[in-house]
Length: 257
Image (cartoon, rainbow, N blue to C red; front, side):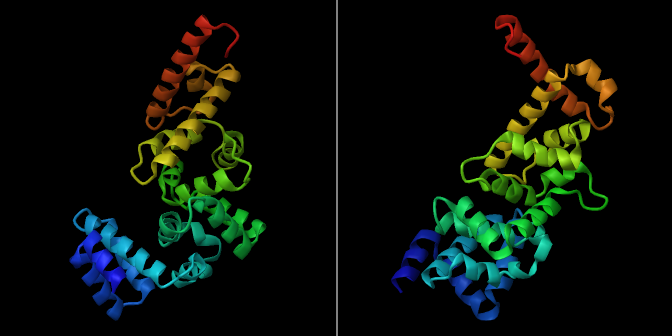
């Protein structure tokens, strides 16, 4: 009762009453799916977030572990498609909000323990690949990309390097305009967290730096990297800005390229 009173005070009676009634009619799995769908709708997103937080705190009060939530959301049945599951962000949120400040590390460890590193790596590879008929920039905009970035940052607990992540993306997209287009498009996606956007910017910086080391400039990129003016204009403009800044620094600090 004390917990219910606290929730009502913090979130309002409406959200708490709604959760109580909905739990009488739906399983936690079905309710979680409904809340996630409601979060995607502008009209209901704010209230849905309140419901989600009440649901999280209810699970915490009931002592549900992240492993139990994992099974409850049927993520253990998703196989290679784990990172495409719409329920995965809910587990990540539960881990982050009410699990630990080291949520990414522990989630990675939990997934490794459950699936094994070989299977998990395969799953991540599937998440990073384009689906049939899906363009590269759309792939990099998908919410699953957040999960992949989070994993790549934590897979080696000693820290991550942009070279490791870049090499994985290069396997999928190559090092040319397709990757540049995907990264530039993903930078403006509303589907990503701020942390993922920061990593995308770092990856783009790393790619452009590699181009400069290969003696590419904005003009030669057009002829050497299958430039398509209908698709690649934004990526080329981003490289022009980068190249101009690198050139300016080179004039000020010779041999710093």
